[in-house]
Length: 388
Image (cartoon, rainbow, N blue to C red):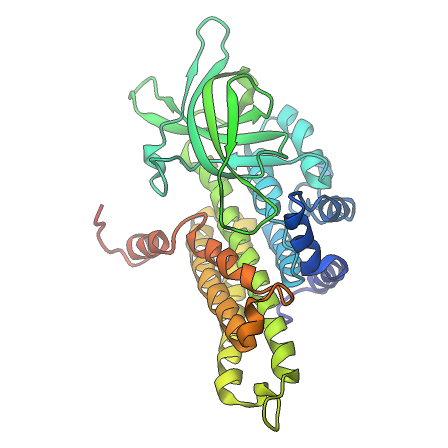
């Protein structure tokens, strides 16, 4: 699966990452999940090879590229059957926010480790009563007038990888002294901070990365835990959310490609009558359509990444939402058709496709639902009135 508009450098990166992923493969991820551990070996090797930080500035140990390159890395690892979900969170969301808005001290402290994989950071935004409506976030940050420290109180849910993260970038809200309204702000919360507790959420999802509920009970943070300008609000927040959508698209496209490849191998070899089942249009055409849908989603993902890397946050917002929507739909259809192509074998552990049925739906649900993306396009692109 190649894209002719890619540069030679991108093609070389794609080939190198694909080779790394092929050395590990789906069996490696399945084994790590069964053992209840994280894909540490793959993460560390990807870090040493420079793949985890391709989007981060060279001055801080990164590759000097952008989300274009990081999405390519995640897509190819996914196509090999071993996507690293924390790529979405640690270098893409947290790394980009710190690189763009962090202080020099924050960049020096975090970016080199995020780039080489020796440090990881989780991201907490969703709350039990504030899913897609970020204006309802109730995690609050207030200043201690005596010390100048911040005090954070609130809850977060569906936070990935907190158990292995050195810190979590928490979206809280502070009160505007002029208007009294709450505005979003981002804080770096160390994993061992007093009052910062986590509880695993029991998921049906088969993944190495666990999901957690977080409780912040007057967590005291120094003044320099705030990332960026206290008054920047949504600008800084969406600097992290656009890459999250682009990377989720890459995650979905990689997964869809992996499922499709397994189905194609099976359809070429499985012979029931005189010819392999792939010769029959009832099998061949849905697989061809799945390939087309994945290719189209990838083009929108590349457009979104290009716009983001060019500094067009508004244009990237629209394209990132469209890419995430298209990739989620394409992934679910590709996985479903792959399982259907294998029949009963598609539900066996041997072929490893059944676990993707649940995983594929993640791309439809997170980090924003397909319905909210349709709302976004309806309002922002088409200019239709809101219903809420």
